[in-house]
Every structure is written in structure tokens, then in C-alpha cells.
Image 1 (cartoon, protein in one colour):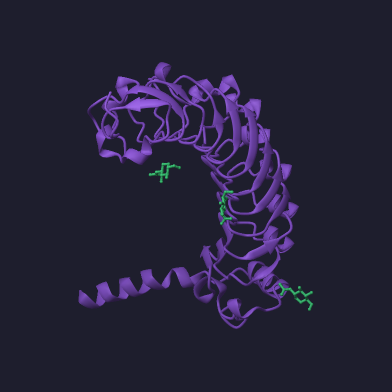
Image 2 (cartoon, rainbow, N blue to C red; image 1 turned 120 degrees about the vertical axis):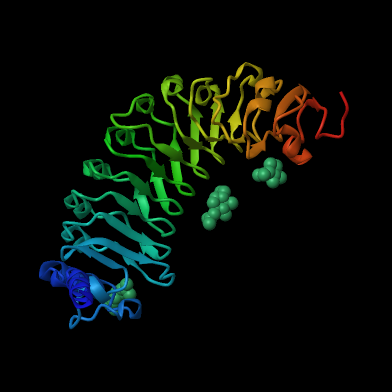
Length: 323
Ligand SMILES: *[C@@H]1O[C@H](CO)[C@@H](O)[C@H](O)[C@H]1NC(C)=O
Ligand SMILES: *[C@@H]1O[C@H](CO)[C@@H](O)[C@H](O)[C@H]1NC(C)=O
Ligand SMILES: *[C@@H]1O[C@H](CO)[C@@H](O)[C@H](O)[C@H]1NC(C)=O
């Protein structure tokens, strides 16, 4: 009986290696290694061994490469190789924390199964290419900390599976597109902090129930109230360091709001009582034009006074100024 158990364990554990690396995929990876001048970082990519079992950053399913991850090779430069588009079964593409330049190659559109794209912390530049919209399975697109320029593409709304668009710290310009008032799939999380975006947020976004919207450090103007609403399930809103100008007194907050940063804007009015009913983890309304008594209760008095500081005439705890 014990022997039988041992034998079956042996067979089960030996199953995966019965699929060795697909020879086309292996060849593609070796070309990619050559593109990077056979860098030391890829020394484990030895043609004599199975790419699925012993090559750094590679994972396979049934012998096909499904995960490609080059990360933290901080001195490695060059462009994203065209050959990446030949890893036809790829689900996850990660090339992050390197010094990659140029744009994302068009060959990426051959990767019909691609779900996750992580290209953060490189020096990629140019406009976000239109052909990304052909990748209909992508749920997570992270191009943050690069040098992308040009507008936020309106076609992001046409990506049926998109759940998160992360483009912090680039040089994107122009407004949030009007098309963001309707997405063919679910409404994605938007992380657009530290770009050069500007203009008014389209009113149509009031229909959208974002889980997270981070617009910190841009030049947005006017109304920002469309991100709030009593029925929304939004968890995080960060509008800090913009030129938003609206009346906070009129805002209704959804029960799930946990992180609110409105600091460094031109927001006026008083703090709604309702804020005491939220389970807030982060709260910052400093450097605005708010007035009146800070409502007592909930989490509000647990925040530091500097998170309420530099307003026109706010008073009451945790500020020292009495009403
Ligand atoms: C590879 O070598 C060529 C020729 O020396 C050079 O032009 C290129 O920049 C190198 N690429 C990388 C990624 O080191
Ligand atoms: C991101 O952008 C902010 C604001 O422009 C800047 O202060 C910060 O240094 C940037 N971070 C990096 C890593 O470039
Ligand atoms: C709130 O904003 C102020 C002013 O920019 C800043 O000093 C403080 O660190 C912020 N607090 C948090 C928790 O981010």
C-alpha cells in the first residue's frame, strides 16, 4: 500500500516535467537573450536546459511559456524586443525596474491571451500606442513611472476586461476623455497621479462607480464632486494637489469610502456630518478653503491636526482653534 502511494506520488510529481519547453518558445527566449547581448542577468537561460523548469522569470503551462518576468535588472537597457510577440500563450508580461527605452512594440498585439502587463519603472516614451486596445483579455495595465506623453487614450473604455489602469508618474497631458462616462466592461481603477493632466472632469463620470480614483498631482480644475455619491462603492478617492474647486457641504459619501485625500485644492464649504459615519483609514483635507466646525465622532478626531490645516476657517478638534 505504502509503495503504491509512493509510486502514485512519483507519477503525479513527474507529470509537469513530461511537458518540456516548447521549442519555438525556447528559440524565442534565446533570441530575446541575444537582444539583450546575452546579459549576465539571463545566465540561467541555458540552451541545454528546459526553459520551463530552470530559467529565471519563466513559467509554463503544458510546455508553453505563460509568464515572462524580467524585473529589477536595474542597469539593463535596450528596447522591448519585438520577439516578445512570439510567445503566443503568454498570460503575464512583466518587464519592470529596468532602463527600457522606446515604446511598446506593435508585435505585442499577437498576444491574444495576455492578461497582465507590468511595465512600470522604465524609460518608455511616446504616446500610449492605440494598438494596445486590440488586447481584449488584458485586466491589468501598469505603465507607471515611465516617460509616456500625449493623452489618456479614450479607447481604454473599449477594453472589455480592464480592471486597473495604472499610469502614475508619466508626462500624460490633456483631460480625462469624455468616453470615460461609459465602459464596455467593468469600471476600472484609475491611477493617474503625477502627470500633467488638466481640464475639467467630464460630468458623465458621475454615473461611474470607481473603486479607486487617484488623480493626485495634476492640474485638474473645477468640479470633483462627480466621484462621490451615497450609492457608490468607491473605496479610495485622491484628488490632492490639483485645482479642484467645489462645495464639500453638498457631497454625499458612499459607506465604503475609506481613503479620502483632497489636500491642496480650492475646495470650499463645510464638512458634512456624514463623514463621522465612515470607517476612514486615510483622510486629508489640508490646504483648501473649508470653513466651520469639524464634526465630532467616527474616525475624524483620530487624524492629525495637519491633515485639517491651512483652511480658511475650520475649527474644533483635532485643530487647536476652538469654534
Ligand atoms: C548590444 O550590443 C550592441 C553592439 O555593441 C549595442 O549597440 C547595444 O546597445 C547593446 N544592447 C544592450 C541591451 O546592451
Ligand atoms: C513622481 O512624480 C512626483 C511629482 O512630480 C515627483 O516628485 C517624484 O519624484 C516622481 N517620482 C519618481 C520616482 O520619478
Ligand atoms: C496631508 O497633507 C499634508 C500637506 O500636504 C501633508 O503634510 C501630510 O503628510 C498629509 N498627510 C497624509 C497622511 O498624507
